[in-house]
Image (tube, rainbow, N blue to C red; front, side, top):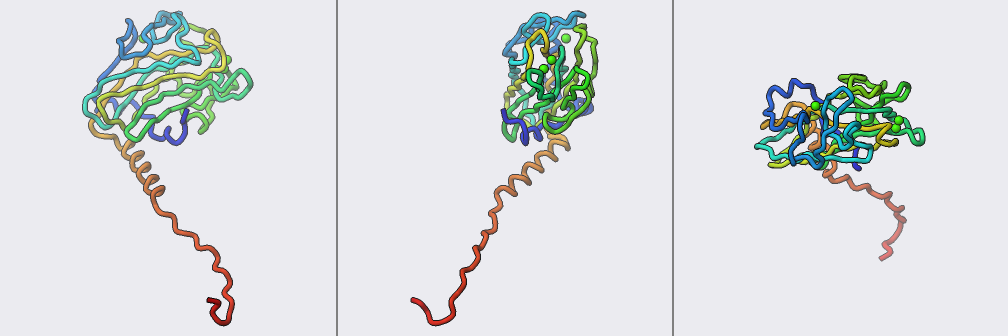
Length: 242
Ligand SMILES: [Ca+2]
Ligand SMILES: [Ca+2]
Ligand SMILES: [Ca+2]
């Protein structure tokens, strides 16, 4: 999966942006969601919160992927918000055999091409995680920026409120959510809750900055490189050889 470079198209934003965008979709999974989801069964935490997940208790395993397909009004920017349930002993960025890394990704086709936001989470002491940075670009303490810790009832869990903004055009959007975990469902799993999608007719300043940066990079790539003159061969003095 392509992860770097394209990650720059995603902008982690605060909820302030939400106020000026029109909400086109919201789902809290109190009942079975619509056919816009590729997987529709709902799981329930030990404390009774319902969320999207295949297994009725633990949600999705580390090899599963789920997509959300929506029709959108005219727009130039999309804001995607959701709560990510990190259930069990996720091990973050560790490369210990059989333990990690434990990764989560969001993939979407943006106005500039396919983009993935890939990061890692950890619920285990001394196992750092990438988030809030993308995987490979940072190391943070387990549960950094979690909105809730050990409040789902599994004994070892955390919740992250992710808010991603990206340039997008067209009347349909397909968002893929998935994980790559090193251990089985009863040890590590995940789920989604409170998924909100907003469309905005004008790109935000952050998106314009990213678009400008991409345009600059592409203009550099198109610039013809100055030909490198080979060293001129030594010229023999004397009469022409022709
Ligand atoms: Ca819920
Ligand atoms: Ca583990
Ligand atoms: Ca693991």
